[in-house]
Structure formats: structure tokens, C-alpha cells
Length: 455
Image (cartoon, rainbow, N blue to C red; front, side, top):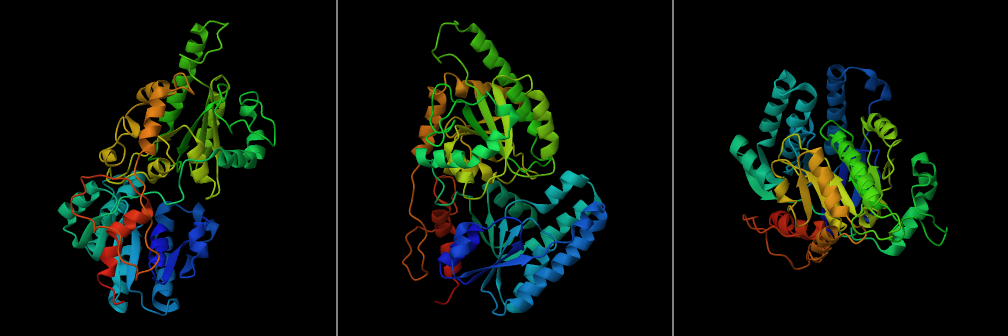
């Protein structure tokens, strides 16, 4: 969606083709140059069929729908066709075909490797995985430009598949409206969420008293306010939620121990752990399974509560900007991509504890903007270190200050005729810097596409 916004803000008439089900970002709805084209879903009855049966049917349906949009219903041949990979089948082949027929330049945005995701379901040795890998290599081999979310992905694909075309790294960055939430924004968000929170039986007698409508249980940071931990998940097998559950179990026990050691007459919070409210956002197939497990576990927990919320797009960054810590359980099927959820958290000034994998260091700088863990016990120890003596938690405050001190830069010019304000990206991406999506797109993609456009 952010690519579509950036193209439109740079003067391109932009068609966004994709499935419905999620509300588009507000900018796409107000930009006059953007048209959103929906691909229809298969009837839900097909979901009951085995994967090996429904997959070919789904592919045929996608082929027909995409070709109708790209060859028939969009009457003016596009200058560029940008496709995000995955999904790979059939979209990579279709955009290559349409690019040849209509003379369009194809840009592949490599977010992950489609065959590696399929391997999670079928196993690496499965014949369909080998076919998918061959398909991806064949139709992803050549393009006008290849965009990579990590240096590791660029190096791997150049070595394995000898990609042809411009090759640049475009790190994911947060949109310009992501920021640390103000007290007013926090107040309005939790007033909005109050009816939902009131239905959570586990939160009764857990949150501090509030005087509605003047304040909420989480508007202000007070000694009796729980620390707020946010984890965004797709509830899929590549994110092991049991790691977080085990860490929370250990945390609850440590909080109980430290509270028991403090003098009964002492009101100080030094040396204690706070109550912890864990908010898990997102939808996915394993949600019900894990939330039932959470419900059973927290019947005996005094210091931890875990709830699942689904938020509107405009509320999600406010929640991130009001939380105290984020946790990421993304493990990457290819070990070559980076979790967008961490990018969002950093954009909202939220430090992160993230599960380690091969290229995570391209985003999370251990001890500077977050912490990296490999096991549940390591995560539990990090939670204890970060939240000790909350809200006067020095370690957590230091990570937050590091994020707040990152430089912010202006957004992409809204007209293609505006003089360029950014240096063109160099091949040396070692000098890692933080910025908004707009600035990064303007620095990397804008000069790439405008160099071949007749204005």
C-alpha cells in the first residue's frame, strides 16, 4: 500500500490490485490518483477442501482475475508494474507476460521467498516446494528493478539466481504518521477500547481504578499502572507464541518472589516488578488455540494478564506509541526478511525484544534499540531487567531515549517536477540510518523510476 501512496504522491496515476478484507490506509482513499481494484475471493465453501485440491483452483481464479485487470479493465498501459513477492504463483509469471505485451517495466519487491513459506506447510523436500522454487527463480530472474528488504536477501538471490536488472535495498520504514503517542491520544484510545476491555473477565480487579470520562486505567504512568507489553502476530506456525507464554509464566513467578521479599510496610516500587498487561494484536489460524491456553494459565497468575485485540488501522500506531515494550516472535521462513512489526514499533518509539534469526541485526541493534533473545528463559530475564522498578526502569528508559534520538527527515516531494531533495542511494548500505518510509522511498526508488520516465 505504501508503494502505491508514494507513486501517487510523485505524480503517477496508480492502480492498486489486491484482495479485499483489510481497510486501506487512509492516504490511499483520499489521493485522487489512486484507484483500488479488488480481486474477488473464492466462495468460502472451497476452504473445506484439502490444500492440494483447492490450491490449483485458487491459482486459476487468480490468473483470470489478474489478467482481466492488467490487460482489459486498465485501458492505459502502465509505465511500471510493481509486484510484491510473495505470493509468487501465479503473479510473477503474469506480470512478466503483461510487461512484454504492454511494454511495461516490471519491478519486483522481494519481501520473502514464496517457496520457503510453502516449505513450512509441506516440508523442504516436497515436490510442490521444488516446483515453486523453480517457478520463482524462472520468473523472478529478470526485471527492470529488484527491491530487497535486506542486504542478506540481495546477496543470496544474486548469488543463487544471478538476477538481472537494477538491484537496490529498500529497507522497510514506518509511515510518517507513526510517532510516540501523546497523553491525549492514549486517553482517547483507551476510552474507545473501554467497552472491549470491560468484557475481559481476567482484567477485573487487575487494572487501577479510573474516573471516566476524565481518565482511564492506562492514561497516565503511575506506580499502580501495569506496564504495557504489545506483541503483533499473524498467529501462524512461523511465530512460536509458546515462547512468550513461557516467559510470562517465569515473569509472574519472579514478580511474586520479589513482592514477597519487600517489607510489607514499604510502598516503594524500587526492586519490584510491576503488573504486566500483554496486548496481542492480529488475526490468524492459531489464535483461538493459544488464547484458550492463556485463559487456563492466567487463572493462577497474579501479576500478568494477556488479552487479544483487533484494532482499526488508525488505532494500531497509537497503541504502539502508548506501550512500554514490544515483543516480536517472527522467525522468518527464509531467514532473509525482516519483521515489519518491529519497524512499526520503532516508528512509534517503542523498544523491542525480538526473537533472533540470521539477518535480524540489520534492524535490531542489540542493547541500542532493543534486545535479541533465542529462548523463553532469555526473554523472561530481559523482561525482568527492563521492567525492574517500573515506572523508574532505567534500562527501559535508556532504550526509549535511543529511539527518540534517531534523526527524522522530511517526506517525499508530492510532485515529480519538484527538485530532488535526497542523495541517490549508494551500493554501500553499511551506514544504517533511520528515516520514514517517504524519505527512504524518495532516496532509493524515486531516482530509479524517474531516470526512465519522460516528463
